[in-house]
Image 1: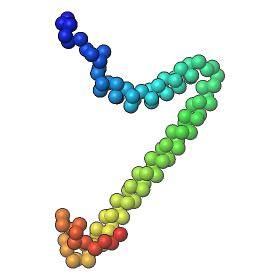
Image 2: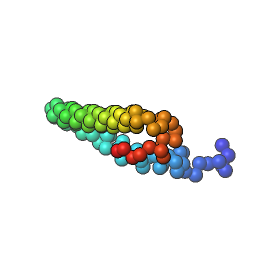
Image 3: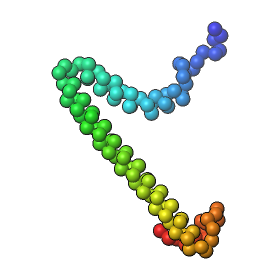
Image 4: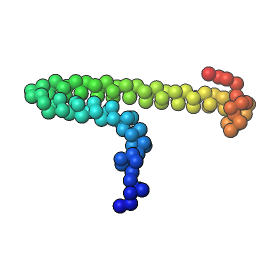
Amino acid sequence: MNSDCIDVWGGGGPMRRATESAMGSMMKSMRRGMRRMRRTRGKKGKRRRRKMRRRKRMRRMVRRMRRERRVRRERRMRRERRIMRKGRYKKSSNMKWKSPNLC
């Protein structure tokens, strides 16, 4: 091994350190949780229940977000159809600046 190609950063370099600082906090918290799980005895059920509750809440949030997005898309479609039905102009790429703001 040549002495001039020794890695200054000790494997990985500054990029690795950057990603570690980003990931690191999450990974650390996860590891801490795992360790706690291992150490405790007889408290696992409660933890699992809490986890389930959190998951349920997350799912509800996600569903609401998706529904809102879908509703918004439908409204936009309806608006475009209404504009087209008026027959002033065909739907095209230059519709943006031609159309009146029907919001």
